[in-house]
Length: 96
Image (cartoon, rainbow, N blue to C red; front, side):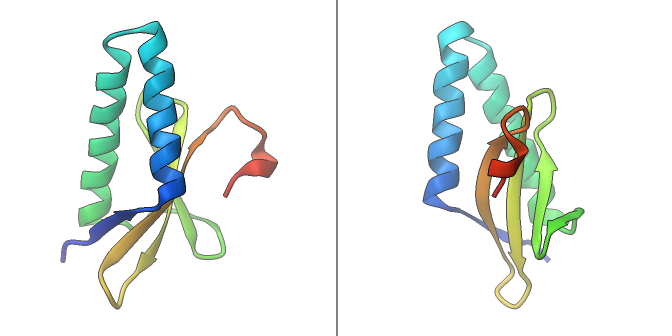
């Protein structure tokens, strides 16, 4: 069963900010970040049951980048709601 991914406005803004930041320093980094993000989305569509971080919120790290995707699963509607794209080096108290 495939899950449909819904990206929240907050997560979309954080993703865009990360892409803009990487674009300042490299031409390849934004492309690689997007590729890593697509890998995460592909993994979530097929099997979203990763480790629970807090209550019903789960997280999956983007390979080669210090970001994690925080999400929740709605099994009745077969959807995954992406809540945040959090930079892992930030203050852990600010995690979603």
